Length: 509
Image (cartoon, rainbow, N blue to C red; front, side, top):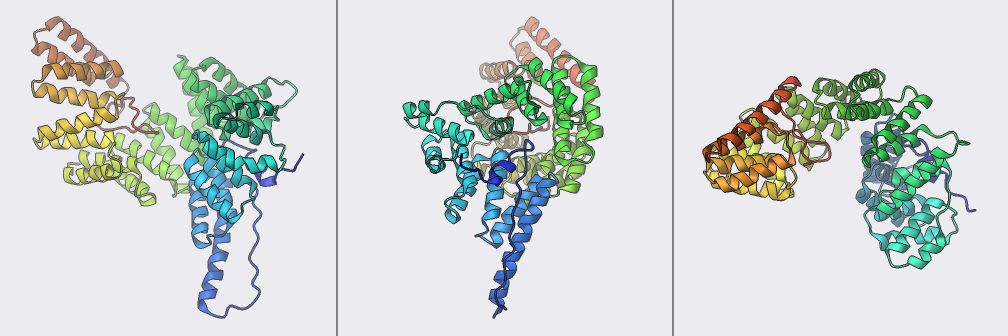
């Protein structure tokens, strides 16, 4: 069996987002620099090595966003520092950013064509996006080198199968793996067939009573069961994980979520607040805790947790974005504006932070500034339903009804499964006495979100206008029911469960 480079195994063996053991060599100065240009080059290279080392320390502290920034800065200073490319590619793959991971791995392959991790990252990242031929080409060299690596073998088999080599793929079989490899597979395999293989490996590891199962493997498998709707099975695994690792905040948070879904409210609250107490100093778990609080509309708790995150990791763009959402929902508009601007300072092209900033500007009567932000979003993404949705509100207030109608039509075309733009379109159509179209739009909104109180209210108005008094009364009852439930929650505003972005953007009403 050919030896697998240490970095390929150490990096993936310890947590859902894990670290790599770095071997950093300091450049030797063979002679005294003869001019300032040479001195600057040497200084840049030394600084790049230092930044790469700081990146490794940031990962050790679970400051992953900061680590990415440091690795990128190292590469800018020394475009030939292969260690920085390798570290960045690996962390991007684990973080689920397959496009950036493959791109970085390819850049590394230019510097070091035989780099094991570069080919592994590029091949798996390509396969995760169903680019079978490209994945096969990256991995072929590893297979020819004789590396007896079950992950490479299975990735290559799927690449062959997907690119027309079914018989060759079948000959490779499905090897058994150690728990560490099963965990690694679960972390990096996102292509559907590979994902199922990884799940089978993880299940076999859990079922093997002779093996002490890594708690992180239990966590990852439980998360997979949750995705598949197997709530009870997931709950059992999280409970088992807590037996092995009682202070695991992520397991407490996820178990709390499952208990809430299963109707076990007291247990759910107890586990969530136990997680909050334990997570006070850990960035990754604080961020996870805050996201659960956001979903539950517990904005004060979310805000408290996120403030701790950004205080320790000021480069965490996602945390700034989430903090902006939480403070916006608490009515702290000035603070929310600063948060979204902090996120944009880290990435000026961050669409959702710019949408959030525009929403804050709208709520503070700065309509022209808000419109400029939404226009900026649409210049980069002409399919942004959220930007059209908010622009329509601005233009409707200005009396530009045809333009507002057009923008809402664009919003529903790009967010067909979100109730909010459908309800807004139906309301505007009703105001224009286009009753038939309004009925279709409002009905669609109610189908998508049966508890959307505002849609029921507009439907009641429409039915009353068409003389359907009994039906209007039923819709009004539903409005009162769901509106009262929203008020009982004691939260700031209504949060529809839209699907406009990965983090659950919470727009104003």
